[in-house]
Length: 375
Image (cartoon, rainbow, N blue to C red):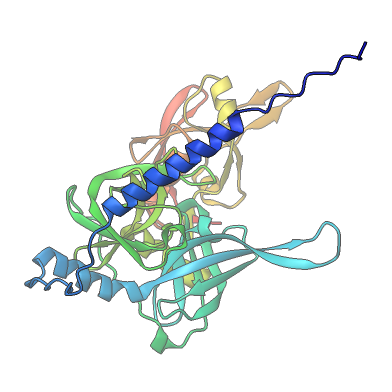
């Protein structure tokens, strides 16, 4: 009896069918390719260019404005110095970019404080593409403004034209020039959307009288100029309201009235000369826990304006703590926080006299104080 043999393996048919299908698909593709082909037309020529005509008046104005103001706008790169974790090598990396503008022929450059804050070194690139090292002259973090200086020749500096912000109107046309996302010399347009806004700086102080605009302002525009239709500076672009970090049509600019007050102070003194009364105050959380409203004086500077006016600080006596004077108003304006009081002081100059409404030992009274210079 012959031993049984295993049945020979069947050859799969799928490979055969795959080849057949591929051949059919290739044939169909070739057929349609031939069908879609268009016979070449050797006499094809470029189309005639239609006459444009004159530019519209608003277009011409925007072009003229850009040509006037753009040479004053600069590109700012903040550079941070870092040390390697695994060696003693020190290297520089870009920390961020922003915008600024030429203030005068002496090489002063104005920008936002938050653009250059924390930088080890700053580079300023002019509109002619030349790059210069920027040296910090002075800063006003409470106003989010800073002044740099570069050693560029006066012939290369094109100072910006300064306008006014006191007479701005909602609906007025405005333009922003800056370097959004590192794209230099970019212009956007919009209108004044609102006036008298308030924004918070990085240190918690409020900037008042801020201009709101729908001109596209993106990261990198900070520190650049907001211009009116005459190409004059009316504000410094400083912030946007945007969950995504890109323009949402709500941008803010520090008004030029504030800029024109702060910048000369920074150039002359390296800091903002501010009026005050020479006191230290309690933290707002303490005021809230005590159920009070206003500014509680903790200490009075000896020989300062507050001491001369007879204001009292908080004292610790054997019987317990005696609260100092609580400032509730300045010049009749209510004061709910230190920020409120400082903003009112900022409307004055050193040696101006203000009237404080205070509460002392549950009694309200008014005291006149001559403002002094504070740091």
